[in-house]
Length: 174
Image (cartoon, rainbow, N blue to C red; front, side, top):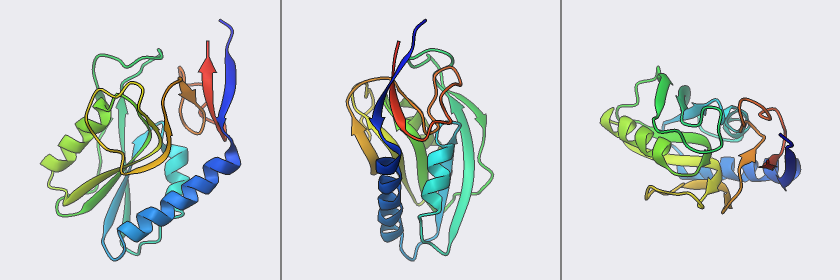
């Protein structure tokens, strides 16, 4: 199968926007304790860059792992929760960091789990807010880049575990 990578967001633009998002998050949560949760695996590069740009003396970091794609390019039928958080979020502000929010099902699941665990507030930050396939009514509070279409890889996002290491965002054209 022939694959073409079409540049969508170059590295300089991407890193500039991540710094802006870090400043936006810092201002929004100024003086408030914050738990920043990385949704693995896709968000790990974005998360690492983002948290270095967040200025908050009461910052806690945690990780959760979910899967909804498997090896294909469309959403699987079920969400898998394979690594749970370790930080207690009861009474705390939580920022979910996603690589991409498309259908919204995974984010909706996490919002519900965190609300049930007593989080004081829950917001979503995603490097890509992909509106084309949104099936759930939810808001990405801190969106890096709104996109309408295309299967996106790079900067942590993958296709069958490939392309995560790329330092830019590409559309995968099969």
